[in-house]
Amino acid sequence: MLEVRGLSRSFGGLKAVDDVTLSVPRGQIVSLIGPNGAGKTTLFALISGFLKPDSGRVSFEGRDITGHKPHAICRAGIVRTFQVVQPFAGLSVHENIAVGAHTRLRDRDEALERAREVAHRVGMGAMLDRPASALTIAGRKRLELARALATDPRLLLLDEVMAGLNATEIGELVEVIRAIRDEGVTIFLIEHVMQAVMRLSDYTHVLNHGAMIASGTPREVTSAPHVIEAYLGHGAAARLAELEAGHA
Image (cartoon, rainbow, N blue to C red; front, side, top):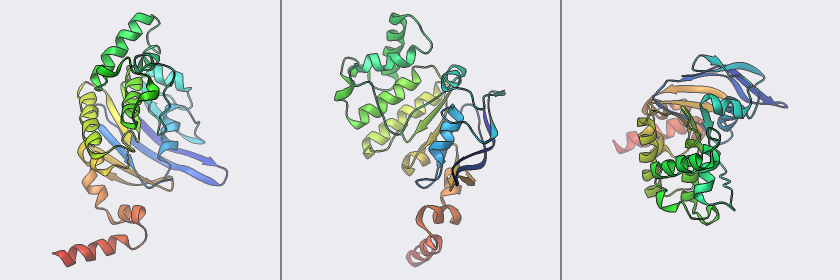
């Protein structure tokens, strides 16, 4: 469904994304993990049109979308959420979600009805009249997800949608995301919450210093020594192995 080939982007002397190649098959949940500063959000920005690559190609459903504007990519069927959630504070939850629906629907009543449907899908049906400014972190995260879903995407890019949530909230959102996939939306997500990565992902890619260092099932990549070292530092894999041997 999504194909990224040799994608690179530099900022001055820093290569934030370095010759990245990956694919996201239709109907799957694919995760992108890596330490802070690995280039994950920059990669999402390149895919979704918020940044232009220095080199490489992005194709979606067989169509080259490299360097297209974000609104054109949204209309093509790809939409993303953002790490820093910024709802329209002066609007209600209902109106915020309708903003997303208006990318497809001109009629106000149709957009509001679409927003109502989406709100129920993500567990916000009882919050429609609530001011967006009154939402908790968990509520704002769901609102960000709902607003993206209201654009009627075929591929949804989720950027740390579970950051800042407690264990119960994470569990609830995992079920919401799984249901969205089951309804036909393919999902590509950046996530640091490994509980969610392990429970949701069909396949996982690992980015470090802008380069892809591992790909496989969540269990395969999280047990790879070079992935452990990318997260925990040089020698961490050996130390963990010693600890496990000591408990055996």
